[in-house]
Image (cartoon, rainbow, N blue to C red; front, side, top):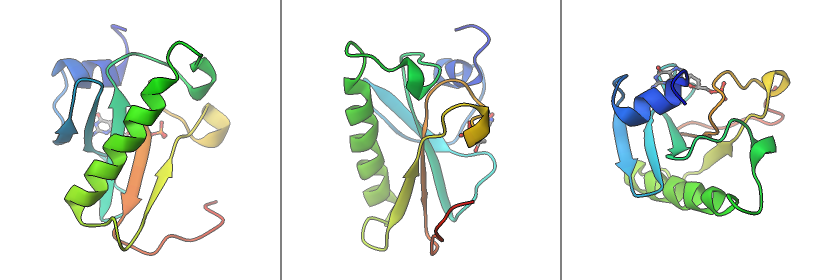
Length: 114
Ligand code: DGP
């Protein structure tokens, strides 16, 4: 999608601090970190929101989770703990409409998240 910020990051049109990539996803540091580790995992395929997941594209979510697990190990937070978040639509705080998984770690996480 030509007007999608994360598609531009995927294409290298907008720079990012990339920490992981494979044939399905890339992961890069969030520009506005909410924890010592704050990384976003995004699929190569443009999918706007979780509401756009289907039987055909559902496997990408598993790929995103496995990538998050690899990033957590790489960042050394797999034992201390990390939180995975996908915001869906404005009311939940989604601001970029290309699905992404937030990986937050390196500090104690509170609940409820607010
Ligand atoms: P969300 O609010 O769930 O849609 O998360 C979008 C995240 O994307 C937010 O935490 C900030 C991050 N973000 C927005 N623009 C950029 C950017 O240009 N570069 C990077 N690295 N992160 C960005």
